[in-house]
Length: 252
Image (cartoon, rainbow, N blue to C red):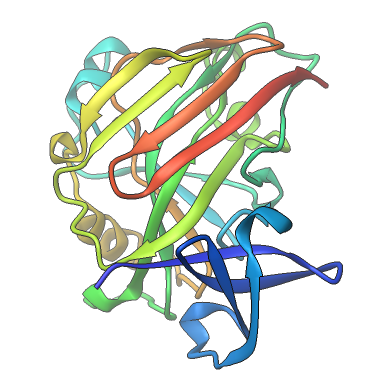
């Protein structure tokens, strides 16, 4: 059964809710903590939305669609290529991506994101570790990525990980349409069936490297068609059954 969880500000505090028919049933804790309902319900139009995760870290997979590896001039990897974004890169739905002064080329990257629901570490083979899925955007300073020869600075700026709009359970993500639109024009269009390594392969691979904690985020890679963002743009990531993540782009 499909379930949709959202995170929002309520009385000035981050709060979780279960969304049904544009109403939010307020929860006592994060959904992976087996929360109780508080009995309070709200209209989803009356709250300020937050990114639906509470990560200690954001783990990303590079070159995980064949067409993206080809456009970047890289061979198809034999195992997942990992890098990290800091948790401070997380950006809420509807908030603005800030273009850094040190970069002249910032790109969008539409991605399927997963959120971890339980502690999972080396040697663990646990498919239940994935709590749910949402849309993500692995915003990247492409010129700095090439200049530095590694990806920490290019991927790590504040606001460079938009996530949302909600965290969805009960959806088969093996073959969903994934798109990116800039100012309403389609720039990426693929399907999650084109992933080289699927979500369960990825989470088990990552867990052999580092312990994952509830609320952590994994971005599973972007399809071909990456390109630049400019101040004033509106960028949307759309994934079938998971919703639309929309963010404006402004100068820092």
